[in-house]
Length: 161
Image (cartoon, rainbow, N blue to C red; front, side, top):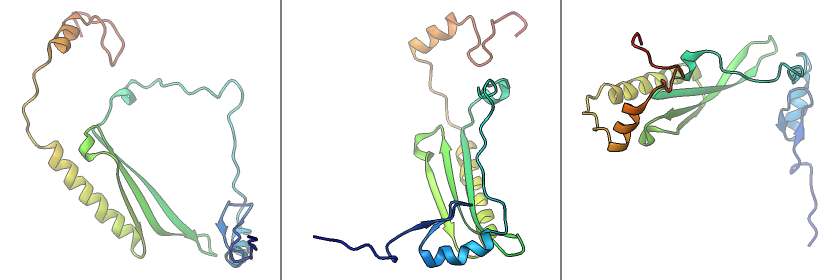
């Protein structure tokens, strides 16, 4: 069986911004995109390419975090007009972890604020619940009593701390 590839089935890529679309979409895209400098990737210099955590406050885990990404188009005047967003909620609590929310349409900023307000309400209800702590297991109690070094600050316990 021979399959013929037509232009309607092909995808084309803009080399300036990595826009992906059909030939007609790319033809419409290029005049506007060519008004802006091409996107570039830069890499750190040799010797400055090692990440190091040196801020102790960043070591403490949070119970909830929301990560958002907006999509937008650029008008001929250079204004970014949002067309949608995606949010990912991560949590220490498995039943609330990895919740994904996407929106595409009009009133993107208002919809995002509505979503964030809903997230705040939901997370506040979880964090404000007053549940009894579980007792330490024998293993946890032994580890706690034997600890000589703080596991988060990685410093020795002293009488003053």
